Every structure is written in structure tokens, then in C-alpha cells.
Image (cartoon, rainbow, N blue to C red):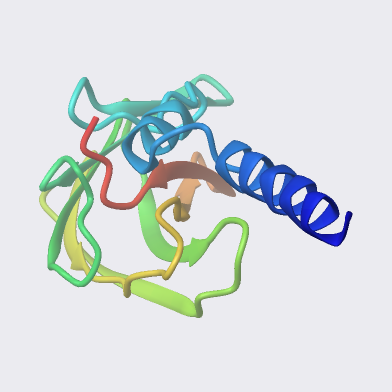
Length: 150
């Protein structure tokens, strides 16, 4: 009788162990990266409309790799000044990463940034952008997935 009890327990344990994660790692990551609220740089510039001003962000490489230099471009639909940018983890504190921007002209800014990797395979970063438009300070943010293979 003890053998039968142990066998049933073992069978139950193995069945539940296999059922814990029915998705493979790759399938799980693909499902998570479909979040349409995140910027998809491999498809297009990520735009935010703030009080009739369109702010566009592009990051290269487009898959936003961790621990690699990122080329950052900001485009505004009208002249702005005092543009500042920082990157932070959206769901997890990963520090505050300032982005040193240079003005190309009154509507285009470029800079570089780099952020660390996360032990999770799903790390969402938030780029905060503040600027002065028509004499008023305004801001917006862009959320994007690190190491996003698309």
C-alpha cells in the first residue's frame, strides 16, 4: 500500500511539474513583446502627441540592446528648447540614466545612452523627455522593451 501511495504522489508531482510552464521560453518572450503600448523601433519612429506638438523618438540599434551604446534621436514637430532626457526602469528601479542631448537644430536632438541588463527577459524602460515649448515646460515619456528582437 505504501508503494501505491508513493507512486500516485510521484505521478501527481511529475504531472504538475510539467504543467507549470507549458510555454517554451521563446514563446513566452514573443507573447510578452506583442504589447502594443510599447515603442516598436524596428517598425517606426515612436510618436507622442502632447498639446498639438508631436514628439518622436528613435533608438538605434532598433532592438534596444542592453549594455550597448544606443544612438538616440528626438524630433519635434515645432521648435523647442531646453530639451532634457533620462531613462529609468518602468516597473523596476534600475537607477536614473541621464542622456546627454545635443541640438542639431530647433526640432532635432541627438544623444547616446546605455543601460544595464536585467536578469528578467522582459525589461521595459521609460524614456522621460522634458522641453520648453512656447514658453512652457512640458514633458512626455516613451516605454520600450530592452533586447526586443521584434
